[in-house]
Image (cartoon, rainbow, N blue to C red; front, side, top):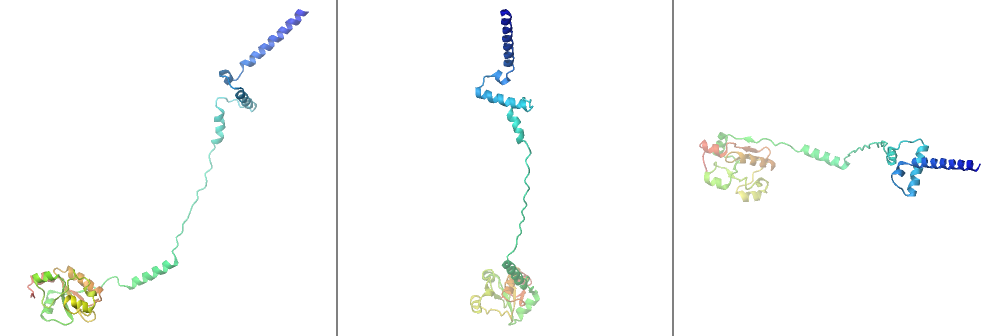
Length: 233
């Protein structure tokens, strides 16, 4: 009887030892590969049990990749803001611009063309001078000394004295040696060597007030000398 009891006890111990050995062989792979700190082992087993409780058997990916799925959702785009800018002109600017435009429109934009004299007309004027028709040579004094001038012509060097027609009458006569022409009564006829300076002098005279009393001899001294005009020295 004692022998049967002893045999049954040995069978129970053998069964318990076999059961404990099977539990040890089913340890997680991480515990089988390396030894962890007890606290790390408890946390690992707790997480592993939670996964099995929720039916998540996918152990091929780390938990940080599984958690990263929550951050892979597309972000919502914020609506673009549109700004509009409206420029307004102050009232003072509009009034000033309108006044300036009216004043500019009231001023003449183009000057009246000056009268052009021919060789024969200048020759007749040199032979028969008139008090209110003044012939003016606008070359420099050195040029007149070398070539001479048309008889009866006065000298006003336009290059060195461009402000001549803007001077007062007494200063004009003191500088150039003849009375300043009257813009209301006298007609001035300009010539130079080839006509360029004569045209510039006519423009200045128009700006000074000789609007309808300005004329030019476009052939100037070259035509006068070529055609045998009389020379005054």
